Image 1 (cartoon, helix red, strand yellow):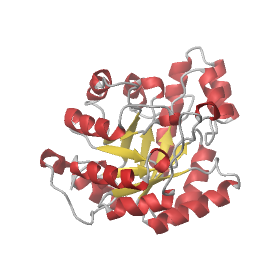
Image 2 (cartoon, rainbow, N blue to C red; image 1 turned 60 degrees about the vertical axis):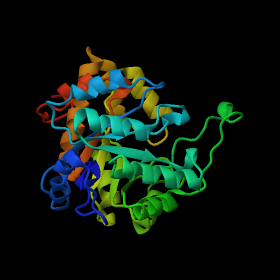
Image 3 (tube, rainbow, N blue to C red; image 1 turned 120 degrees about the vertical axis):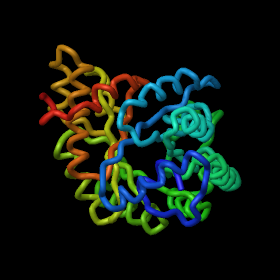
Image 4 (cartoon, rainbow, N blue to C red; image 1 turned 60 degrees about the horizontal axis):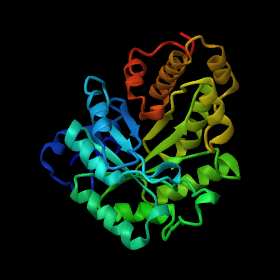
Length: 307
């Protein structure tokens, strides 16, 4: 058994053996037994065929305590390199496992089945099932949403294919708010979800909300962390990006900071401390491919966001 997915569950239905990937097999036992805290780094594939600069950046993270990578699929409904191909390249280059994001937005049922089987054939053992960003109105003349399967059906398909399946918890997107999000999470669990990844949290109140809402699912939960880059970035995320709430105090700290990047990293370190106290892991999402910030963020966590 291998890959980042084994961090979240102890035993796959049919364990695979893929050479050096087997060295990750103990991670699942550690997370199931709450022995240790696991960190993934979210990766956005390049908009083109050349993955070398990205792979070089990810390989440079070797000194850091990073357990794996989580690879997005066509984020914001714009074309990117195949996430499955990039997962395979990342595992070969870094020796660390990669999670494949899967959405029914881009595939019919036949293609989804082939994707899941292909992932296993390439030594990818974990998928994160997402709804997928909706295609913008201006792009719908040329691009359509497929969605042969819903999120729950895709979770079931992934499990039937022998993959570890995670899901996203997003209490701020659905129209009925937290109660509806919890209800959907229950349905995902019933469909076979094995771990949960949350949207980013920026302060104690946000982390507590996520922890309380996900407590009853009785699955390992990984908290999202999206470092802030500039005051404009903080405002944009809060005002324009569905599912992300950046508290006013955090936005103000970015506007007042002499060095916004350093302030954003301090807040991310504080969020990492909050995640360690409440969750099984964290998924850090470096903005705009600034993977170098991870050397600052993954240092010794401070006592608070302004430390």
